[in-house]
Each structure stands twice: as C-alpha cells, then as structure tokens.
Amino acid sequence: MTTAIIEDHPEKIRFPLMEERVVGFLLAFMAGLMNAWTLYHAQTFATVQSGNVLQSGYRLVQGDWSAFIFAFGSVIAFGLGSALCGVLMTNRLRHGQIFTPVVLWFECIALLALAIASRLDLVDPHVVAYGVSFVAGTQGNAFHKDHGMLYGNVAVTFVVQMAFNFLAQSFFKKTGINGEPNLMWAGVFFSVLLGFAAGGAIGFYIDMRVIDHASLFLAAAIAVWLALRAKAQPKAADPTSGGTIA
Image (cartoon, rainbow, N blue to C red; front, top):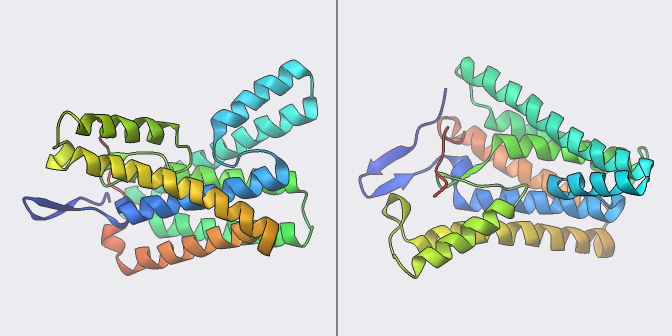
C-alpha cells in the first residue's frame, strides 16, 4: 500500500509524515550525528559513501590494504543496509503494510546496541562503524523525499546542487514547482544542509566534551520520536512513490 498525497484544498497539498520538512531536517541531523561518531572514532564516513569510495581507490594505490578493506567494507555495509531495506519495503507494501515504523524502530535498536557495545569496549570501533553504515543505508533507501521532492538525507551533494539551483531560479521566476515559491524550495534543501551540518557539529561536541558515544544515543532518540509519530498516523506515514527533481 503506497501512501497517497492528501489534498484538502486545491491550493494546498498535505504530505505524509516522512515528507514533512521538519522530518527532512531531523533525518539529515541523524545522518550528521552518525557521521560525527564514525569520523571521530574510526576516521571514516557513515553515510557519505563518495568519500569512502574515493578513499578506497586512494588506499588501494597507496598499498595500505587494511585501510582499503575498511573503507571498502563501509561501502559494502551501507549497500547491504540499503538492499535489505529495499526487500523489507517491497514485502510490506505487497501485503498492504507500512514500512516506516519498522525501519525507524530498527534504526533505534541498532544504534542503541552499537552505542552500548562501543561505550563498554565490547566491539572494535571499526566493526561499530560498519554497523552504523548499515543503519545509514536503511535510512537513505527508506526515506528520500521531502515535501514531494527527491532529496538525500544521508548524502547531500545533490542537496547542495538543488538548494543553489532553486535559489538562482528565484531571481528569475518567483513561482516554481506545485505553484510554490522557488525560495521556499531553496529553503527546503538548505534546511536539510543545516540539519546535516548541525548533526555533525553537535555530535562531535557532545562526544568530545560531554559524554562519549552520546551522538549515537541522540540519533536513536530521534528515531524513537519519529517512530512514535508514525505509529500515531499509520495511514499517512510512508513517503509517496515517484518524485520530482526539477
């Protein structure tokens, strides 16, 4: 069952929970927190796989096999998270079920388990980083629409492109997609960038200055809040299929 966009007035469109602009901000904030942890503790990225792919090539040429395996392994972990999430979503939609709460609860439980294991020194930080990348892959595959528009909350190169694209368009034409201002669309994408950067900054700060590993605990707490919201409105939680990019 795919959630449809709900129209309560020809001039106004209401979007599902996971396409709300504040949710786009929070998902990007979570991604920033995850990257803060992996970059601080394992010197790799949890979500920005372009960086890990580049590092894989660099380490390969350098002949640093352990660093190559770690960077390449992070890419594979992210990909497996995305793939298994795709299987879950397809299966649930075929049976008329929503997938949003399941994905969010998985994120919460997995991040809590990884944070506790790391804090108690039960698992090597590199293994925890693989787990965080796996979680990031599920989030990126499940939720990639904001206000009806395709976007990325775990990798934001495309978001930078679209933010400045709509900002530039606003100088030539006030009204854009869906009859909404181009400046509004620029704001949607800039808010995602703000969330990503804020998550990274706050994650680094609390891990270094407050409580180590708190970044993952905070990301898990956000996942819980979103999961509870999704449970309260199950018929309007999943993002819609398809998307607009310009």
